[in-house]
Image 1 (cartoon, rainbow, N blue to C red):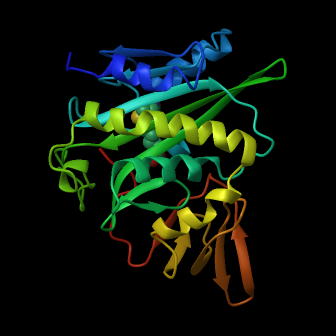
Image 2: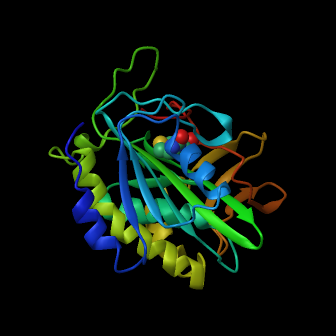
Image 3: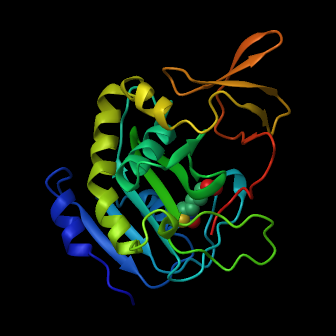
Length: 258
Ligand code: BTN
C-alpha cells in the first residue's frame, strides 16, 4: 500500500464535518459503488474512501473508468446532503478541484478537469435517497502520472505535467478540505455565486462545440444554474442534462482519462 495522508486529511476536514472518517482500501469494485451500497444500507456517516485499485471503476454515461494502480487518485466522498437546488453541483465540484490543484486547469462542461485539450480528471456524482434523507456520493478520478496510452489516439493529461512533484496523496491533501467546504457552501447558496469563477476556467467558452445529442453551436458560457449556453442560428439555447457530453471542434481527445 502506498503512503496516504489519511490523518492529515482527517484533521483538515473533521472540523467541518462531524463524524467524518477517512478510509483507504487496497482494492474495491468502485469507491462510488461501495459508498452507494453503504448509503442504501443506512450508513450515512461522512466518509472519504480512497481506492488504490478499482476492479469496476465507473465513469459518467455508463462508461467504465480505468486507471493503472499508482498512476491516479481515485476516491469518493459521501455525506448527507440537502441543497435547495442541485443544479450546477458537478460544476461546483470541478471548480473546487481545479482551483485547489493548479491555476492552469480548465473545466470542460459539465465537469471534466481539462488541460491543453486533454482530460485530466473526471467526476461522477450520485445520490441515494431514502425516507426523505439524501446522501451524496461524489466520485473523483484524477490522472497523476501519464498512463500507458496504448490504443488511445491522444493520451489523457496527467497532473505531473503541470505539477512535477505531484503524487496522489499530495493531490488529496490539497483538495479535500476545499472540496468539503465547497459542498457545504453549495448546500446553502447553490451554483450562482460560483458562476464568475467557473467562467474564468471554462475551456469551452467562445468555441464551436457539438453535443452527444447532435446539437451544435457556439459555447457562450454557463448560466446561473450551471446550464451550458449555446448560441445557435435560432437563438441561445441552454443544455441542462449532465447525461450529455460535449466536445469542442476539432475533436482531439479521448473522452475518459486514466
Ligand atoms: C467521468 O469522467 O466519466 C467520471 C469518472 C469518475 C471516476 C471516479 S474514480 C473514483 C470513483 N469511483 C468510480 O467508480 N468512479 C469515480
